[in-house]
Image (cartoon, rainbow over all chains, first blue to last red; front, side, top):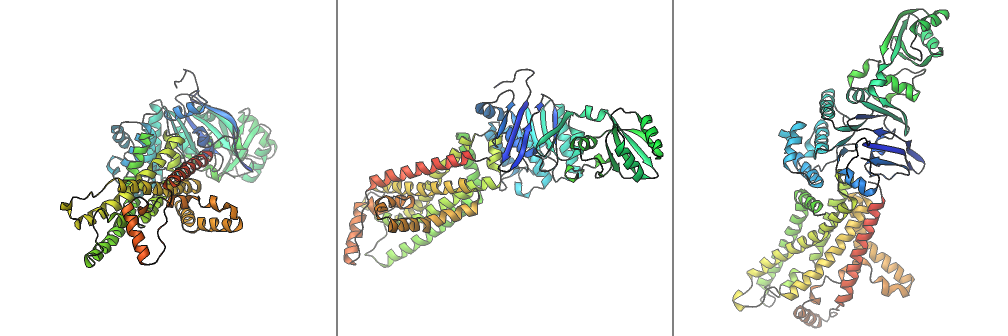
Amino acid sequence: MTSVPGTPIIQTFGLSKRYRKTTAVDDISFRVEPGQVFGFLGPNGAGKTTTIGLLLGIVTPTGGRFELFGGRSASDLHAARRRIGATLETPNFYPYLSGRDNLRIVANVKRRDAAEIERVLDLVGLGRRAKHKFKAYSLGMKQRLALAATMLGDPELIILDEPANGLDPEGMREIREIIRGLGERGKTIFLSSHLLSEVERTCTHVAIIQNGRIVRQESVADVTSHGVAGLRSADLEALAAAVAEYPAARWSDRRGDRVVAELEDGDLAALNTWLSGRGVHLSHLSLEARSLEDVFMEATGAAEGHAAPGGAGDTGSGSHQLGDVP
Amino acid sequence: MWAAFRSEMRKMWKRPATWVTLGLFGLMTVADLIGEYRRARKDPDDPFFLPDAWSQILGQEVMVGFIFASVLVILLVAAEFSWRTARQNVIDGLSKTQWYWAKVLLIPVLSALFLALRAAIGGLFALAGTDLAAGAELFGTVQLAALGGMFVTGTGFASLALFAAVAIRASGPAMAVWFAWFALGEGLVVGGLGALFEGLRPILKWAPIMTFSRLRDYIQYDPEALRRATELAVEQESPVPELEALGPAFAGSLLWIAGLLLLGWLWYRKRDL
C-alpha cells in the first residue's frame, strides 16, 4: 500500500465504540496530515486510548470508519501497521527479557535488521542498559524502551499513548526532546496525553476529547494566537462575578489573585468601561497569550465559575493534568 | 508465521519457567529411573535393559511430562495477555492469525521436548544394564510408534491448555480450569451424564481427556510387553490388560485437537485485545 500525495495519514469518519451501556468513543471525526505532530488531549477516561486502539485495529468499532494512509480494508490495516510504530497505555514488553532481547522480538515481528536495534537504543540513551532485564528498568527507562521500539523500522507514523505518564520532570523533558526530534525529522506523530504542557510544547496540532467526543481541533499556533484578558482588582469576588456576566466574554476563570477571560471582540477598553459602570475598578488589565489550558477550559465549558488548577502560566511545570479539571 | 515462531522459540528459551518445568521433570525422571535401576540390580529376574525397559521408561510417568508441558503452554501464552504483549505484537505488525498459530506450533514442540527428555534419560539409564554385544535392536519401530501415540496424547492435553489460556487470558485461572477438567471435571461430567442418560455412554467415552489417554499405554504398541503384562496379570490373578483400538483413538484425538485449536482461534479472534 502506498500513500497518494495529499492523502491524510489518519482520517476518521464518525468513529464510535460502545461497551454495553458505556460509550467510550462517540462519533469522532478528525484528520492527521503528513508531518504533523498531532496532540490528542483529554482527561483520563476521555476515550483517548480507545481511539488509538480503534486506529490500530485491536478494538473493533461499533460505528463509523477510519483510514490509515488512505486505506480502509483489513488488509490495508495490516499493511499500514508495518508503517506505524505505536505503543498503547503502558510500555508492553516481556519482563524476563533484556531491553535488547525485547527489541529483537519487535525487530523480528517488523522484519527489521537486528543492527537497527543498536541505533534506536542509542537514540533513546539506553545503549548501556540494554542487557538488563526489562523488569529491572525504571519507569522512565521503560518509556524510553517503548519509544525505541516504536522507532524500529523507521515508521512514517508514530503513535504514542501517554508517553510521559508517571515520569519525573527530567524524564518528561527527555521524552519531549526525543519526540521533538522525531517531529523535526518529518515523522507524523499522534500523541495522546492528559498533560497540557506536553501537548503545548510538543505538538503542532491538537484535538481535544472529552467524554468520547472531540470538542475542538485546530493548530496549536491558532490556539495560542488569540489573547485573553488578565484582570486584577481589590475586590476579586466582585470582579469575577462581573466578568462572568460580561456579554462579550466567551469564558472567564479565577486564577489566584486575578481573573482571566477570553473576549469575542478583544476590546479591553470596552471591558474596562463596562466594569467601571458596575462599580468594579481594576488595578491591572493586560492582554495575555492564551494557553492550551484556556482553550481546553473554553472547549469543555468547564471554566465558568470554577477555579482551574494552577495559574495560566503554570503549564511549564509539566505536571498540569487535565484530569484535575472539574 | 515462521518469523513469529522464531520469536516464540526465543521467548520460550529465555523464559525461566521453561527450564524450571523441564528441570523438575528431568529430576523426577532421574529419581524414578534410579529406583528402577536399583530394583533391577537387586532382582536379576526383573532386569532393566533395552529394549524391554522401554515399557517402564515410557510408562505412566510420561503423563507427568505432559502435565508439565500443558502448564508451560498456559504460562507461555496466558502471560502474554497479562503483560499486554499479545496486543503489542499485533500493533507491531503480526496478524492475529500469525500470533495464534505461532502459539499453536509451541504445542508439538513442548510435547516432543518433554517426551524426548523422558526417553533420553530413561534410555541412558537402561543402556547401562544392556548387553550391547547381544546385538538386540535397542530402539525400533515399536518404540517409534509408541512415542508417536504418546506424542498425540501430549499434544491433545496441551491443545486443551492452549484453549484455556486464550479463553481465560490469565495464567492462574487457566491452569486451575485446565487441571480441574483434567483431573476431575471430565470424569464428573462423563459419570454424571452417563448415569442420567445411559444411551449417551458410547459417546461420552470419547470425551477429550479419555480419548487422548487411549494412546498413552506402551503395551498397546509392543506385543512383547503386552505378553509380559498379561503373564504377570494371570500370575497375580489380576485383570488382564485390555487393548484399545488404536485407529479410532488416533482419529478421535486428532479431531479433538483440531476442534480445540479451531475453537480457541475463533474465541481469540472474536475478542478485542
